[in-house]
Amino acid sequence: VTTLAAFATAEVATVFTNPLTGIALHGITLLALFAASGFGGRGERVADGPLSRLLYALALVPLIRIVSLTMPLGRFDQTYWFVAAGLPVFIAAVVIVGTLGIRPRDIGLRLTRRGTRLQLLIAVFGLALGFAEYHILRPDALIDDLTLRQFILPALVIMFATGFLEEFIFRGVLQRLAEGVLGRSGLLYVSLIFAILHIGYRSATDFLFVLAIALLYGWVVRRTGSIIGVSVSHGITNITLFLVMPFVPVLAAQPDWLPPLH
Image 1: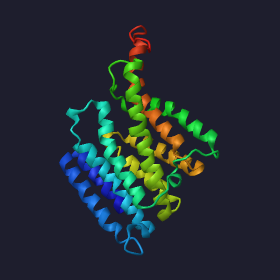
Image 2: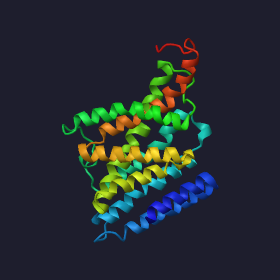
Image 3: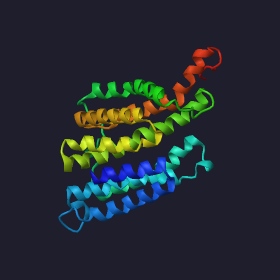
Image 4: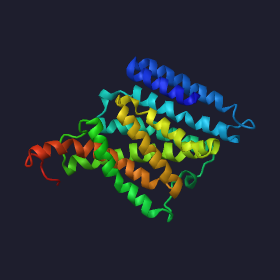
């Protein structure tokens, strides 16, 4: 409850008061998590206790926001901003996984026969999720025209920097460690954190939508033991949301306006 309150307070401050205040609160939370992780183990090392391991890994949450809020947006194309903001977080996540001695297979970095159909289904379901979220948020397109030349690279970036990276952190690392402390409630705990980080969209509907999807993704990972299906689904959702759906209303109004893919 304390960590959820800290994350939510920092996000609300960022969105509704002052981003600098939000950064400061996230920074305080980051330091507090590192400090608290030293009190959750049975020995001197951070890897010795389940609670300590979870608190240590939770430092990724404020780090995500600090990096995204301090990234100089004006120096990057919006698509490449995803890479610039995601790469430091990915490196930090890899360091944390290595420090805690977590094996790739333990956080779902594997293909499994169990639940293959479920993984394929959830991956394809990303199209419907992107369609639904577009009607909630109505974001502008990240590209100027829906052509193959403009589409491919941003789609690959979004697939890695949002689809894989976020599932690696939340459904892979954090959900596994949270369930080690909270049991089955760990899925709800991590899903709430994931939804809190979407407060910036200023939409209660989207908050509930993201929470529901996080719960679904968490259940799929628990059922299949793999994050591959949800990573692809998450990437497809954001590709549909930011690269495809913004052009659909225009296409419907002017069928000949949109050039064919080539």
